[in-house]
Amino acid sequence: MSVNDLFSTDLKPVNLGLDMFADDLKAQGVEPVLMDWTPPGGGDPEVIAALSRLEDPAVAEKIDAANQVALERILGSQPFLEGFGQAIDTVPGMTKKTILHAGPPIEFTRMSGPMKGAVTGALVFEGLAKDVDEAFELAASGEITFSPCHEHQSVGSMAGVTSASMWVHKVTNRTYGNTAYTNLSEQLSKILRFGANDQSVIDRLNWMRDVFGPVLAGAMELNAEGIDLRLMLSQALHMGDEAHNRNVAGTTLLIQALAPYILESDFTTKEKREVFDFVASSDYFSGPTWMVAAKASMDAANGIENSTIVTTMARNGVDFGIRVSGTGGQWFTGPAQEVVGPMFAGYTPADSGLDMGDSAITETFGIGGFAMAAAPAIVALVGGTVDEAMGYSRTMNAITTGNNPNVTIPALDFMGVPSGIDVRKVMETGILPIINTAIAHREPGIGMIGAGITHPPVEAFQKALRALADTVKP
Image 1 (cartoon, rainbow, N blue to C red):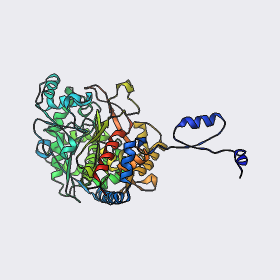
Image 2 (image 1 turned 135 degrees about the vertical axis):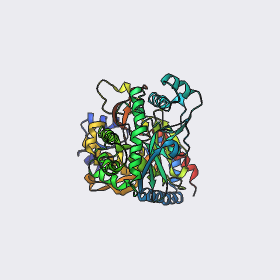
Image 3 (image 1 turned 90 degrees about the vertical axis):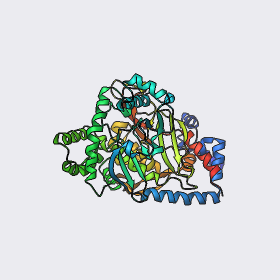
Image 4 (image 1 turned 60 degrees about the horizontal axis):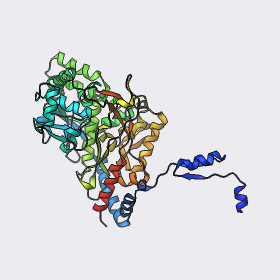
């Protein structure tokens, strides 16, 4: 075909990169084929150089072998709920003046409004301050030890604040022997983990300390076998949950498993009824349970030399941090992002705090935003369409190492949830992990005001990739 013949036919140009080129073609009556493409590493020369070093055949072979080990550990993990205990007696490193928080390390002066609200409320709850004002002074005094939940084998929803008297799940990964912890759900939207800290919040925490935690602990003392959370999680996804922000099925399954032992316990009928009523007040009762199951599974993949698999994604409302198997406990951070989604009546995006919480451990494992195809009804809470929810689960395959055959999505022909986020693939494709999450008000003392979708900052993955390029050698 000659050049003249070519230009006498209908042209089908393919546009890579900036949409403005496609717009110019459309203005001239030509319909281009749009390709969703970005340059590897976002075009950053240092990141591209790091990718090149990691693509060296000898290096890539070592990474792929290490990643296979890490993935096998994630898929082979069997987290079992074995009991509940108070943090002071259960969580490693906890003291009466220790406050654990979500996300990477942060000092009190840099904390977001809702995290400061949660911290001060916890200090009042613990009896370390008589009111919120005194608690603020104490928190800023240097007398309180602040530390990330993740550095104490723990995770925490939203602000993640965990103090000595709070009751926590104890979940053991029976395949690899590691144990993880998380506190109990407060259920309602005006709660400590969203930064609320008035007397109603403190009263609820007191009841959880005196009744809720002891009843759950007593029930599990009667259950010698423990509860297989991997099996229960799989059932929950088959019943329409994604196990981060939609937990209708999971909560039903979990309280169903606990109920016989609660009834057999020595607590009063009134106390048992209060527990059942409290669980019935919100579907989120099982939310922390799936977080700690994911934590126990991901911790088994920590510390594998040469692995580029992400084992932690966590945020504190100021910084978003990731940790990678092959770089141990090192945090790689970037700025916490805006969460985009529906707001409760009376609030606007200007009221929103930035992304916060350890609950992104669910997406790190492969559920939550990665499993939205299993829970199309979630779009009513976080926004978007059912088609988008289905697409998120498919797209995450592009940045993960494999699929989990133990936790599957019926609507995608029982595809296993995408598992093992690979830093290299994130940087090569430009696709960032999808996270669905709640939104806290930016000011302390208010609580939850919406929910939506967000992504990690690319800076965290860029830093991790550069560190890996310096760590993994041929």
